[in-house]
Image (cartoon, rainbow, N blue to C red; front, side, top):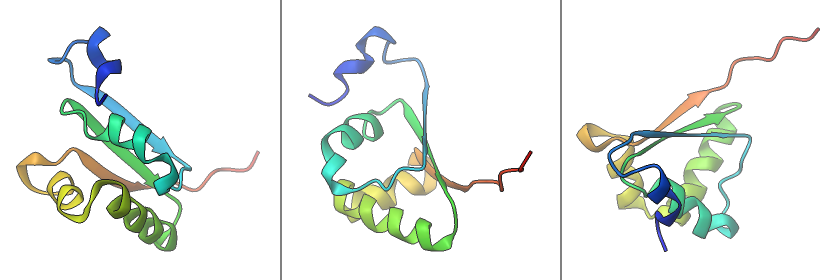
Length: 91
């Protein structure tokens, strides 16, 4: 059931979801939809390079559907954003 985990936080609270190093594959559809499609959740997805970004977008289209992904990545209803991860510094 979508969003049931959010009940303890309250629906008016803005929640932030950060996805780092995940393929967003369709095999994780149920849990990804549960998190990403909850209305008060803003999702930031980090990608390594343009190739990975393309793969993540293609996978999210399979998970959310093209229209839903477009709706959530642009305009006034934007709840998903992609950010390129910074290069890790070696110590």
